[in-house]
Length: 338
Image (spheres, rainbow, N blue to C red):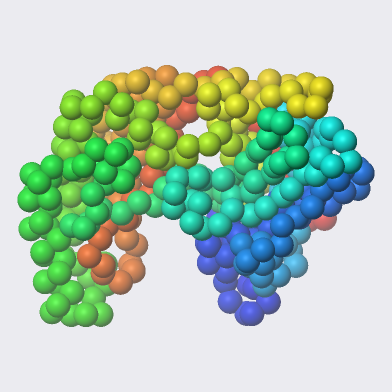
C-alpha cells in the first residue's frame, strides 16, 4: 500500500520520496535514541542526508509518524543483535551515522543507512537497507546497449544474445518513431511480441553463462543483495508490520565489539553454488522464477505499467525465498491512536 496521505505540497509522494523519508526516519530515530542513552553519536549532515530530510519534511504529519514509529520499533531488536550500536571503547570512540550516496548503490552497496566506529581497530561498520512497502532488491533494465552479463556477473553476454533481442527493440523503436508520445498500454501484443521473447532470450543467455562460468550463482546473488552484509528493514503498511532480516554474509554481522557480546544470534548465511531450476512462472508472460540451492529463490518480473514507451525493459527483481536460517523478525507497527 502506498502512502495514503497527501504531502504538505498537496500531492502524493512518489516511491523514491517515501523511501528516502523512511531512511531519514531511521537515521534520526536511532540518533535520538542513542543520544538519550548517553552514547557519543553524530549524524553526518551532508547532501545525501539533506535530501532524505527534505523528503521527510514534505510528508503529511501522519505519514511522518508512521515512518518514525516503524524506525523506533526496530531499535530494541537491532541493539540486541548489534552491540556496536551502544558499546563505546572510550571518549574518542564516536558512532557516526550517515545516509549512503546514490553512487554507492550504483557500485553495488545496497545499504541506505551506515553506522561506523572509525576510531577503533579494527574499524566497525553496520548497514541498514530501508524498504517502504516493497521488497524489490533491484530494478535493473534490459536493452540493446545493456550487457547484463558484464554488469551483473562480470561475464559479458554473447553476440548471439544481442542478435536475438535486436528485432524486438527495433520494433519498440519503430513504435516510438511513429508516435513519440506512445505509452506501453497502447502497444498491441506487447506480451507475446515483446515481453515473452525478451525473457526467453534473457533466460537462454543466463543459462549459457551459468554453463560456462561456475561462479554465476554467487555473482548473481552478490549483485542483487550487494557486496556488504546488512540488515533489511521493511515497512509493510498493509500488514501493519516492520520486518527485520539479517543478511549475515560471511558472518560479518552480529559480532562482539569493545568487549560486549550480542544478546541474540543471527546465523551466517551462504551464497548459492548452483541453479536448480529457471523457467517462466506458471500462466505468466511477464515473470521468470529461479530456484537455487541454499534456499534462495528469485523472481524476475518485467513491468512497465502504463508509462511512456522506452527503448528498455525494466525488471522488478525480488528475493521470494531466503535461506531458512536467515534471521527474520516481524514487529507490529500499529498506530495506537487509531
